[in-house]
Length: 371
Image 1 (tube, rainbow, N blue to C red):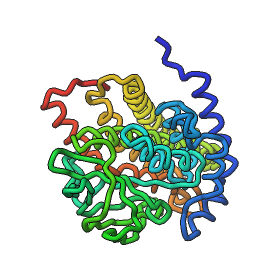
Image 2: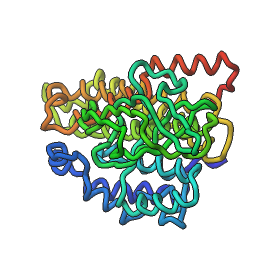
Image 3: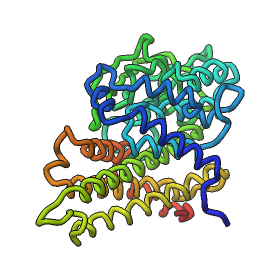
């Protein structure tokens, strides 16, 4: 068996690193953080121009015709550079439309995602602890076949730039994904910001018109959540990897007692622990990503990867902040962004306790252990 990435995947990773390195500089990131949108549209256009934005979308709609492995490689690089663009939100919503949507909807939405002219978002979280159970938000179909959504979604990302949101809800026949125009009647947005300073909103739906994506049979929501959790794990690995790289540079340049901090054994132990966590995050991520790409039974693999990204990812960003001393909490120094991104990702779709509770429920129900 060959566990190496393909030449094509390595080329994609290299191109992504080149784009993020040239566009998502420290100075540019500071500028975006002070802007009204906090979205780097120049970087977004470059990702579209290079074909990276639509890499997992079908070629017939302007995409690259590749798969989730290539998308996750892109997201790892985004995390490494903590680049302020909504790749996972837009791309995974588009992939759900591609998988379950009608031909007309695919033709309408996917080309504009691939060329960078449209943002999409997803509404999966609600107020209260995340359990992975059926959403409290409800979906109803009237006698004419029209769907409406009622309920609340918490911290929906990028609602200020995305006019369409893919929302999870519970219908009489099972859970469902529905596409909602956020500017339509029956939708109220309360804007807020996430831990890593991105703009998001708590969204209230009061009988808002919606379009059903696929069937309301309980299959579409788990399909999307599995892929979102692995996308977050990919970004988290990149965030941790970037934080360690920052720490290595700092510790080799900063001297104490006449020698670089990198030569101190206690410091080396901290980074060695980071390496162990990152390797566990990496292998569990790519095990689950491979199983999805091959259409295999996922078993516990997604939740194991999610738990490592949440728990191990937080340890990495905390350790790398700690070894920077006072510089770690200086917002003029870039490593603090990795801490904020790491904490935000760890809190999305439940923290480590939630992950373990869901994993325990899977094991108790007889789900195969695959990790």
